[in-house]
Amino acid sequence: MFVRNAWYVAGWADEIGVTPLARRICNEPVVLFRDSRNRAAALLDMCCHRGAPLHIGKVVEQGLQCGYHGLVFDHSGACVHVPGQEHILERTRVRSFPVVEQDAFVWIWMGDPAKADPHKIVRWPYHNDTVNWPHKHTMYPIKAAAMLMVDNLMDLTHLGYVHVSTIGGNPTQHVEAKMDVERTSLGVKFTRWMLNSVPPPTYVKAVGFQGRIDRCQRFEFVAPGSVLQWTGASDAGGYRDGDTSDSKLAFRLYHALTPETDTSCFYFWSAANGFRQDEPAATEQFFEQVAAAFLEDKTVVEAQQTRLAELGESALVDIASDSVRLHMRRTMERLLAEEAQQPLAAE
Image (cartoon, rainbow, N blue to C red; front, side):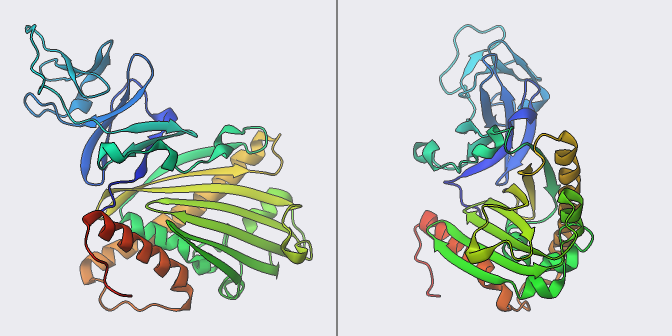
């Protein structure tokens, strides 16, 4: 089950062009394209004439042309041209989905169009600030449920085991990190402090740390699929009284998990660096390091999905580090229950 009355990332703005892009979102086939006015559009990927997928067609002046019999649909899904036919029945149309282009993303609403409020879209202005926050972005197709990837981001004690060669560090430091947690109406915020710790390899490559450091990580989960991250580091002793304003290393990551099916998802992520901003090589190097770490996550979570599909979840147990993850899951359960108008069982 998916929360449908919500905004999901359908794609990066720069991957949607005049060539139709097929993408399954929340188990529905969607075709994304730009019309002649450069407006991003999303339609159900099936022609209403004979059921051909629209993504095998092409974009023409009037809209998206079906590659089977040439019917043309505009960005709203209305048929505006039928070859050899002057009168077009009003019901000759395909379903359209509300889309909004914002902060380098194209967002899509899979639920009731009347409830699609653009003001509820998560803002990430750092994508637009190339001077202070130069960034690179990409998308990984993941053969695992979107919620398993969110789970992974809610319990960072895995960093010391999965990401030893990149962004990890000593496992004990992660397990013993001081945590500040704040619950929100759409998720949770948490801050992790790892003071006087050994810098992981990625941090050393980024700014040349030579001794121990103070690390801080701030995360926010916004249902149903966004995780906002700020990470900073300073030489040990630099984070007095929780002040992180003078971080030697600072970066921002956006994680967007969009369900494809029940057991697969799209992982859109970006890495924006707040250090050595005038050096393109620094942005590239940092991106490569983060990309390597996230491929490690992909490997683990996909293997997890395979095993869970085989054996189920009934034998799984929760441990202390699951507290944030469990609140995230309860938030999702509440939203699903509210959408289905069913009472949520007592916790």
